[in-house]
Amino acid sequence: MAPIRVVLADDHAVVRRGIREFLETEAGIEVVGEASDGQEAQEMIEALRPDVAVLDVRMPKATGIEVTRHIREKRLNVGVLVLTAYDDDPFVLAALQAGANGYVLKTAEAEEITRAVRAVAEGKSALDSAIAAKVIAHVTGGARPADMVEPLSAREVEVLQLAAAGFTNRAIGRRLGISDRTVQGHLANVYGKLQVSSRTEAVTKALQLGVIHLPESED
Image (tube, rainbow, N blue to C red; front, top):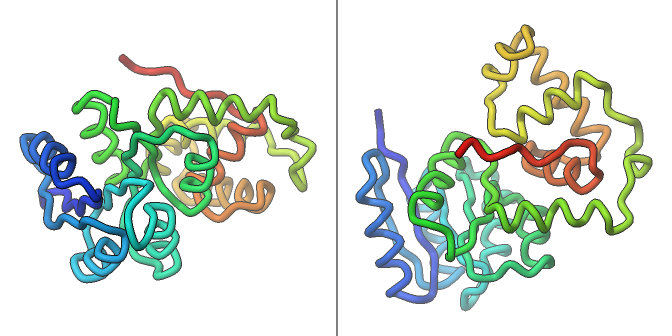
């Protein structure tokens, strides 16, 4: 199986070196490039087309949020994991809204960060537990299910809850006894009702609205 190809972007060389070292001790992960600012990150990601871009939020020339937005606007098939020291709500929500697949704090254990890289490479969402708690906290900030155009059906909630737990469409189908195509159809309906365009956005908004709950840790 081909290794997961990663581009690291952080304006601190020492931080990049540390991240690179523990990522590359894991079998199946290869760091193919390092960028010291956002503009360099954009150029490197376009040139190398990695499986995952690991981005800091605050960088010279372009922020990690701007790089994420650039990746999505260019429709590059690259997973985005924001790895940062900043847990401020505006940064978190802006990154997720820009299209980041994951948001993990630098205080996380090396194993957690590696696990997040693997999850993002597989198209799953990866949220640091502290970040997930912040997203959940927005449920009390005034958002209500009535803000949706149309309420989700019980089956759509089931599908979205499993998506939030990181299951693929095929795995969701097996769990619910339905086909991949049916799962895809349910997700398309969810996107329309929540007025979002991606799985990560759907999960984030559903958590904010209190439609689904945060999956429990398997540890």
